[in-house]
Image (cartoon, rainbow, N blue to C red):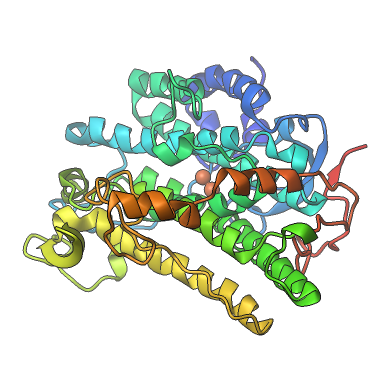
Length: 472
Ligand SMILES: [Fe+2]
Ligand SMILES: [Fe+2]
């Protein structure tokens, strides 16, 4: 791969041309990435022109550059947010020291693990979503899917940059392994559970963007507080892209809710299946599923790992520097929900070991704001129904509720009640088959599948009926 013009092919603000060693590592990795993208990226659309946003620099003009691109020719760049002059480690044992520009030797293994775990989610979601293009509800949605996919690809580049630039040979090996694991593969699965689930339909996709990608937002936000400055700068820029993924999820669900309400009013029934819509009870079951598997991503309520990451200055709290406390947390406590026999109670636990739960709380509050906006649509249609977040203990596989059976309203229940009721709470085989039956592609510009309302506006000031993907 000699003769690549890195400032052109890999837009970057990390002076790649001055770093021969890093340049060689990325030269070696790039063709493997492209091979992975061809094999595991969006199936069936690699040769099509897509109206995509490309980041070519981090300033206001450069980071949202729109134009038609074939995805394999997308310019996956490496961008760090502008450095903050005089930045310090803002929490933990090293609080007040200058932020690290190089990996501190004692934290090398831990930091690498944090970066690899984050990095692994990026290609995983591309793999999970690779067949969705064939059943898109519109060209507008197809384009949004591909935008999310190429950006997750760029996030992989961002993590590989950190590994290659700061972790030597181990980093290069991890970079390769990121391309070798496969979502859902029994032998070489992706690292985290939710990233091995299937995303078989567009309702699942929008729920994934809303719930699972939002976990990404909270993980990135706490890594953006890191005392390791290159990680902080990398994550800060990734968060600007992550915001778009949340938008795709929230507005996607909102449009399905909107369409459901229209059909309910038109046909005076909440049984929408004979009218080709997705009823709100089915939406609630999908919501319950995606919310609960995403809550697991935050890990155990009580975690010494989380405490160690914090004390070491590697991973902070959400909006760490905005918090008014000592940023050491040696004395502080935090309220954590715990199982006590057949009840769920709140207990004060040492704040340091409760950091996963605290981040989960920030996440739940953010999810609740989105759900309130969906309910606003239902309310405006004068329909008496409310979508609700399930209780955090519902359907959990990780942490202190993993062994318990808990209803979405937070009641601890018996196995018998769970067996009798869980089909009311989680998507059933019938639900899945019905949703699958709706997955018929709609590819005429300006047309939308019957189960989803058109968006209020198009992308980048373009009309809704713009040809967002050129299929001809
Ligand atoms: Fe991402
Ligand atoms: Fe994302």
